[in-house]
Length: 240
Image (cartoon, rainbow, N blue to C red):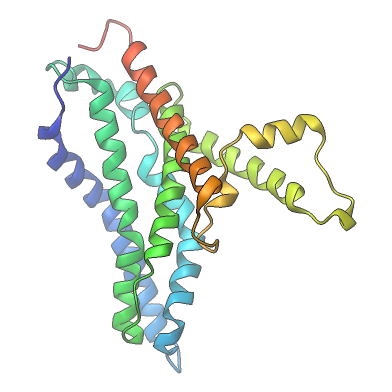
């Protein structure tokens, strides 16, 4: 079971464009309709601010939508039995599916920007915002991918981890004058959780240790998922 499943790529892309892609375009059309009905229409100079606000609100739910059920759906529905009846590598297959999700998430900022350009006039595409959103997918999508290899509620567990990490990050960043600090136990938990606080679309571009932290953590999540797919059976009776 060593073949790279490139032949499945067009079908994966088609399925995600017909699901997540349609949601993205429908949301962008709704935003466009709302903007053109505002009187007066905001100037094009406000375009990046509006895009950032939309991505900040919708980015996380869309990332969870793109990365949830990558493995768990096939295990639950039994699709893996037909998929892997051919000599296809499960780690390569699901890694490819995860990367297709990353591609769909990469379309968020350009698509939203395109529709707002139709409504407001020309303004530049924010490559920084795209990069931050992809880093968020690297962490959040990696976590969901890992959980999906074992449990059905992958997106819910990822969401709970985000909420916990956000709370702990808030306490950790609180000024000393507020007399708020984490106990050693919760400080340890905060340090081992994914560094979601570093990848906000409102944050400055990551460099140095912070960027390395995010990249290494995300890579670790994905590699752990691939290791489980390599060594743990997908279901009773094997993978055929």
